[in-house]
Image (cartoon, rainbow, N blue to C red; front, side, top):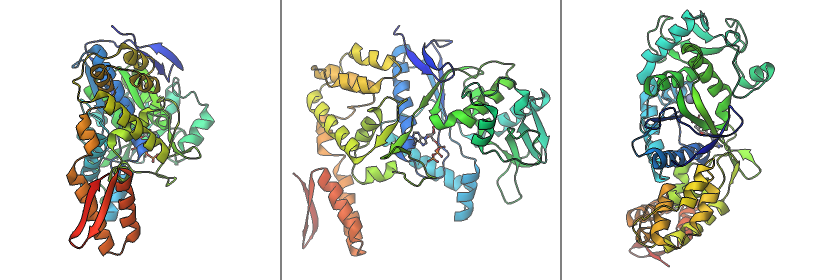
Length: 438
Ligand SMILES: Nc1ncnc2c1ncn2[C@@H]1O[C@H](COP(=O)(O)OP(=O)(O)OP(=O)(O)O)[C@@H](O)[C@H]1O
Ligand SMILES: [Zn+2]
């Protein structure tokens, strides 16, 4: 069996990966909170862990991996979005989960084995909270249930921050009902007009962290092989997941390996985030005519632990490299996978090295199979060079005509320019607009 090494956030070093049961490798990645469209920063973990899932299936067998990526479909930001639109939260979460799956699908991200929804696991969360209270790790106060951080002497092992930094960093509300400022919410009351579930502590809803702990326990077990997410989740989210799960399970570790991806940033190194307002949405990129596979390639062009600056140049470079690879692969059927590509991925998922090794492969069949392992070159060369299909271009041309009618010339120009980037020129005539490839 191929030896895999991953940098474990908990151990702070690269370690040989050894799943408890190689016939059932378990991986959990914290998924989206579904109340708005995903930006390319949000896409980075989805793409990175999709490559990891492909590698694990390659090494341990197609059916050996159980990969769960949850959907957070109860959260205060969802409740607020629903209130603003005057609809039920489920209307918001259904809509944005669909968008998320479409956007990630366009980037070649395969659905995980299981996609558990928080709202389907309220009973499991309540049961876990009851256990934590019974064992003295949590307490009820003022309709809330809080995890008592000082009750867990091992709290903070993942991020190793000192207590003051954790309190400041968590921006945890210093509420009067808390016994300690670091204590965090497991359950909170819902006002009559807000969505809620009956519980031993009254009608309410769960905190974010307990969702993952309960869903992991239910679907994957007490100790899983890999837990992943973005760097920003280490604290407080993963620290809190660890504390809840470990205390509820008599000290059993939550995960054997912790993997965290670095940030995608905008020029200047600023993290792409909704709160900073510097986001580039996956859906917008696709609408502008970027190919999903090129965006995927760009996201894999840096090592997952390193920061990655997003730029138009990065996207253009990715597209140009893919053009070259598609030309080399032609319409070959996948053959054997190049061991040098596997070896690069086996070394802490070194995707930049794997991509550069793809470029060195001469045999089209080997190139195709090796690229497929990274979720690339899934199309035929003919389909790639023809574009995503005429329907899409027709739709863009129609959108431009509409924009012109509405005298939104900036939008019309933007669409024309995006098509030009793909080598498509528009001709406006008496009978409407036609397009051709140059
Ligand atoms: N700029 C980024 N680069 C890489 N990963 C990111 C970035 N922003 C968010 N993530 C990751 O995206 C995943 C989904 O997170 P979530 O839906 O909670 O988005 P978010 O953290 O609310 O986004 P934002 O930071 O824009 O508010 C998480 O694993 C998170 O770590
Ligand atoms: Zn989580």
